[in-house]
Amino acid sequence: MDKPEASAPPRFHLPVYEGPLDLLLHLIKRAELAPGDVTASIITEQYLEYLEVLEALNLDIAGEYLVMASTLLLIKSFSMLPHPAADDADEAEELKRDLVERLLEYQRYREAAAKLGERPLLGRDVFAGGGEAIAESDRVEAPLKVSVFDLVQAMGAVLRKIADRLPRDLELRDIPIAQCIPRVLEAIRRGGRIEFVSLFDELADRPLVIATFIALLELVRQRRVRAFQEVRFGPIWLERGEIDSEPVQIEQPADD
Image (cartoon, rainbow, N blue to C red; front, side):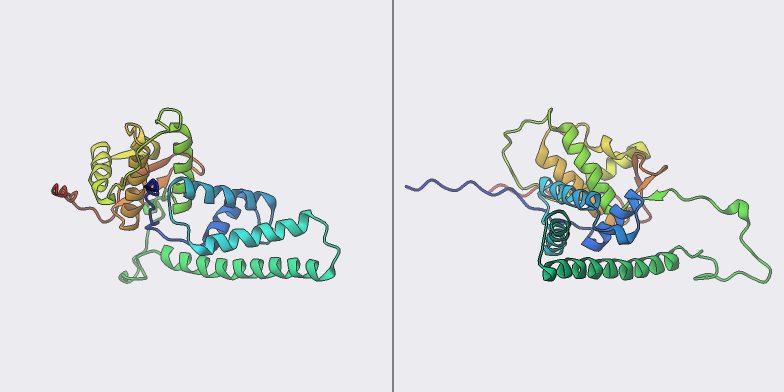
């Protein structure tokens, strides 16, 4: 009798989807480079490291990410290895030029959308009476927003940190994300706000750690949880979001 194949590890879908151009802009901003430096080695290396974290999290990687990774590696190979044929050099330059143009165009759209979204509520959706204005003393500096890429990178650091204390031989199982949502909400409500890494301190099970992270991403997407930094590259904090409701009671499935 043939031996049954081992079941594949559960795969998770990223609830907050942002594409490869978003990731490239994020990495360029963090490295303080210009969009024209998108093919720099440090960007390619960090891009591949990000995909490794997605794989470690058992997240389904969209095909666009893999296509972009192939493009970056191809351009990098042309720059590092000798290619005497003129056609090869022209192809590399065309690939790089096309990528930079796409990135610049995408950046313009993102910046325009961000400016529209950051316009003061007063004067956009609500109009002041004659002579009424917003006093400078009433303006509060907002904390730094955290992107899904920041959260994934922070989760990669958590996985490396807990690797030694978690058993390596674990029975893989599919954990419903909905079962993790009430625990995340309760932890935040109990503490008012909590640091991102503390959400995983008491978890001694890698599948549960991953499912809890995906639940957090879903709550961020629903705006029930807000993730932010007080200083650039500082700790990530979690607090109640704009849309907050009582935790949903999850019924356990009945035993067969």
